[in-house]
Length: 76
Image 1 (spheres, one colour):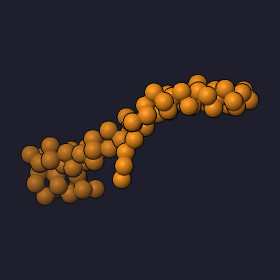
Image 2 (spheres, one colour):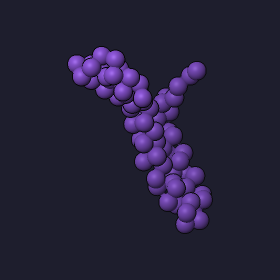
Image 3 (cartoon, one colour):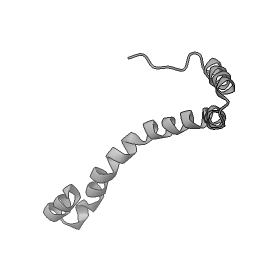
């Protein structure tokens, strides 16, 4: 609706501005979306081992992954 309002008030020359109003929030969320997928892939082996009931092996897999990135965290 905001894009239609912008185009309605300003005409077709403001269509670029209207597209930017719609697409800017999506672009702003892109870094957080990309970072989340990385974490799911690194724990894939542990999840597979848990599904087969190998909990102790899954625990070691998680510990190994955490040791690879010991300083990969955010404070806040």
